[in-house]
Length: 170
Image (cartoon, rainbow, N blue to C red; front, top):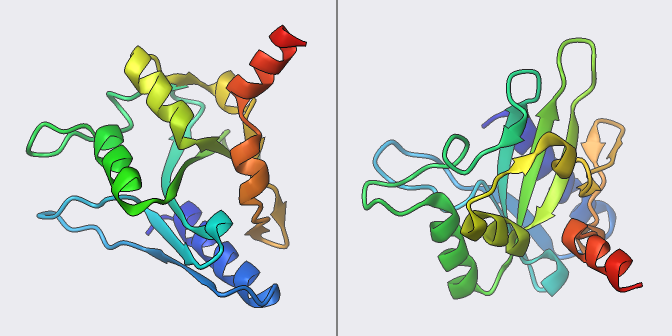
């Protein structure tokens, strides 16, 4: 498990304990012979915390975008990871999020952002990835005392596309 996934998982579990919320975040194990659905599953009776989160960590000094061909996988049945996750979200009733950590080089702190899954699907269907600048327009996952601040309502509602539409309509 990479550090980003581990820290995000730990952040959810600490959040649940501190706020006396019945919930748990766990990571599905990866296997060479079995396709992993998503990186993190969050289970709770509270629908705000019934989530599936795919995590991507990108070296922003070596790439200028998150690409669907480079950063996502295709399984042995030729099914793209975005399609597999979307099917899982539909069948499970979970809300999906894409957590993207941008590694900005030595001496600079890493920043992480949450993108609602519906926007990932829209971009995938359009055949367009996310530039680093576009990723940074989404909800940043705040850090406090080494953990991430858990706020799924803000992550889900802080939609870059929604904000742009509101500006155009306003």
